[in-house]
Length: 480
Image 1 (cartoon, rainbow, N blue to C red):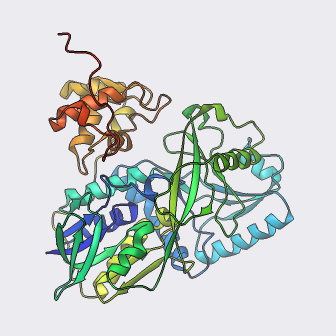
Image 2: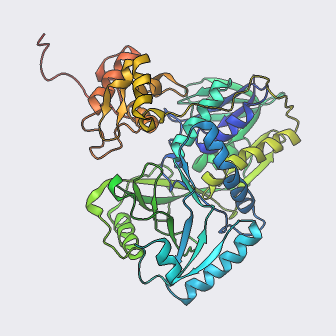
Image 3: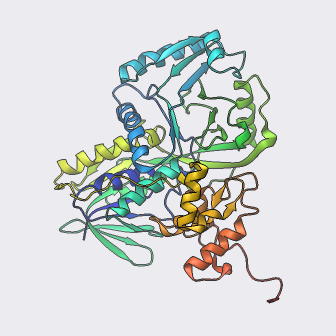
């Protein structure tokens, strides 16, 4: 019997698991995919929002500002890259300026620090490549950027290192109330029991809630498409550049990433299908058009290395849906933007709800909040690298030349919690395959390492589980 079962292995579920793992509790994470961070967490804007956009007094506003304040320490403890680069919400006319003035008032009421409305000259001084049509901007110096899937993997890994259990490929099919809690089953018949459930299932949170008898809310997906440019474009802007927001979101942004790429997007289209993640010609054309309008220099779309699509979980209430059903079932639903920014504070809030509803908490004497950074080698000095290689020669073999990822880092990703099981799992943990060639050269070497570590053949290695095999057989016989 688990004390708490968390359904959903995204960044919100991961942060909740990490927070709970600090206490003497038996907890588990139930993730329907083959890996964690497979939903909205792996495909979003990677922004830590300052907190000026959400309506005053809402959960979004409160938890965004609190989460933004917590994020720097959380990322430092988890060894995750974080950069407080600040954000600019740009305006092109008098109507935009009026909206920015409203956001300034709202942000001040929400407790966001350092907000200021800038004129054209001040904007140009901060961002020389900004469009000359921009007449004003709201500057939020506390805005930041982070890698969302790296944060999720680190949080869940830290929770597992502190005793949490992870069940993958656990697509929940039924939830039954028992005398002491819940019986949670998946489609193959495997069952776990838990005294409390935290429902952090993203776009499927309403379906999970209905299994527990809660029909009080609904979720629909909102498509967001992105274009990612090569690292040589990362210095185009230093701030995250937003357009003046509408009811559908914050518009097409232009932002550096913590890995020095340039990110453009997202679109914002309400959908019905919770699994449809294909990019579209229309969506990518919109991203390119509006991104071009934000800058006075040509956007080098020829240096695009990938495009992708994510689905945001939009609730029917206009706010985060965080409540308790039936005394022991905690909904954490409708966590659209600024969900990533708010995730540490959401975990803190959920901990309070669980305590209020009878979960007894006793701090672990041996809890360790620290996780060693997984990108330390490539950022080390030559002397430090040589010392590491002397101890472990696998760090002296470069596997991914685009991103300078070594064999030692890939082996660590395969062996560390939560372990990488496939090509994409290694990619998210190490950036191997995220460079210009998108795995064209390093892919076969990563496959060899996965096959060797798991004692299988290369024909069994997949891109992302299921039937996504990379090779089906040999074209030539053994020439040895």
